[in-house]
Image 1 (cartoon, one colour):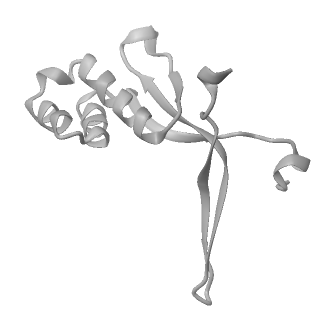
Image 2: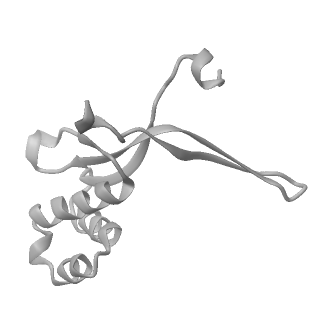
Length: 118
């Protein structure tokens, strides 16, 4: 169980800006995911879960490099600078339509009595 500890985090799920200037934010339990659709897997969507957003972003940049971005000088420069999101964006920009490489929070769908939401 210790190997899976720490995956679920309270992640910003919404921000409400009211006319009176107040701001209300809501956080809900989620895991950070990396989603990839490319040439491998006959176009299937693969999704992995990570403990942190930073871990998922770095893994996404590594995957982009493994998928050919290591041959692109701009991608190598971005990778060496630790600009993980930019490497992933470049992957999508240079890939065929339908390919994607994204990091996002996947929110847990809890029973109504556990989350307070309906």
